[in-house]
Length: 65
Image (cartoon, rainbow, N blue to C red; front, side):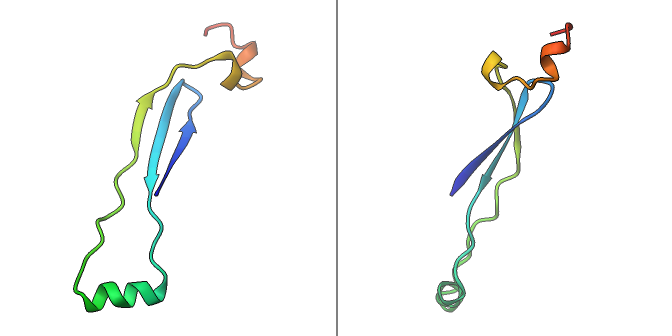
């Protein structure tokens, strides 16, 4: 399982929590045991603090921030 953080240009962040899918052999075992894996969670959008370190060069010329 991994969390992918995608910053947006308006200072928010999209967080995608992703899980890998099982290899075919493992999926066969899961199927034979009649188990079900949970679905991927939906993306979450959060407000992130924009710091000088993660600002884009285009943002440095935008005087409204």
